[in-house]
Amino acid sequence: MRDFFIQSFEMIVSAIVVIAAIGVFIGGLVMMFNAQGGFLPGLGIWIVGGIYVLFLGGAMYLGLGIYQNTKRTADAIEALARK
Image 1 (cartoon, rainbow, N blue to C red):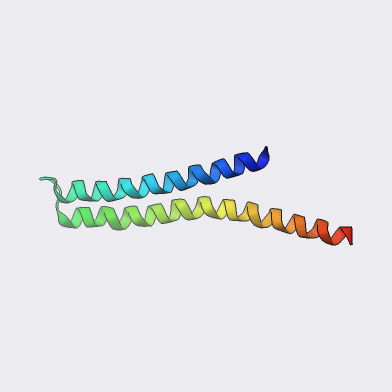
Image 2 (image 1 turned 30 degrees about the vertical axis):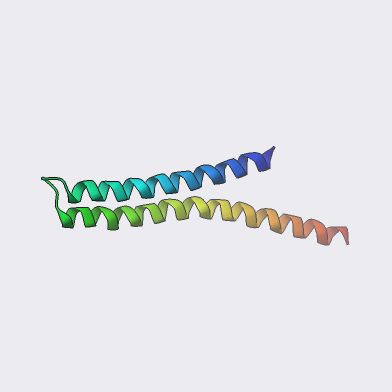
């Protein structure tokens, strides 16, 4: 049951990162073609938003990676203890 929740969380993280990236792209386009915006503010949204998505996704995937590494380490220690 625990693996189900971890795998579900991985899918949710992937979906969040994709939706955030699409949102940043669309937001930049809207700003570029908005009468009150312009090319540079739209480019700024792409740059800052892209960095934000990288940090957001990276932090979430880092947490998942720590879990996976801890699980592998525990499995390896159990295998050594059986010998």
